[in-house]
Length: 255
Image (tube, rainbow, N blue to C red; front, side, top):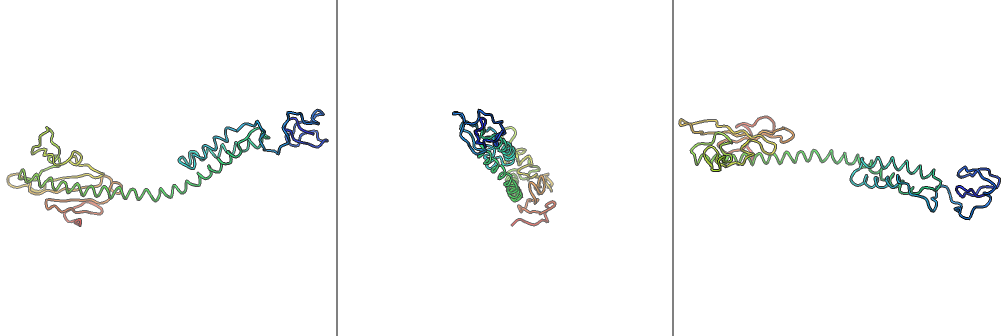
């Protein structure tokens, strides 16, 4: 006896369809010409529609294993479970179980990638931070050398070392003078560059008021983040450093 609802072939003594539970009447003894032939449960009918959640799960699964990981992986798993269960209960009226299953698998794979990403980040971030600090320290040493050259050049022109970084900075009126000789760019003359703060001081003056000695030092803006070591120099042109704390004339010279 064929079921008019799903086309399942039931024993002649059955009152209800073994597949979908539809009551069986006398008129169901023979399958109507337009009825679908008997098909195993879960196999989609010829005119079955694809479940939209299965498609969404597949798309999110692909996104999850490529660029969006957690943000797309979890929705892919949720929609995949809902769609897969819905398709199984539809008795062939819906299809897309393969897409739902693929979305589920890729969703779970995206979750497995998260610990790997965390491990990579734990390794990469400290290395990037150390590289950044090393670059900032190299820049600080280069800036102190620039200050030394600017100070010596100033002294050769004006018979006195400058008394501030600003004096070696860009000219304000467009024409360099003793107050702004245009030997340093704006950032270094302001005392800040590449994660370091620069201080310049005249430490000794002669009888005529001319500056005869100077001391300049560079400190990390945030020690341990923008840089670790402190650097300093003086009119002798030697650059020194301290691994922690302030740099002084007694600190270790750079080789």
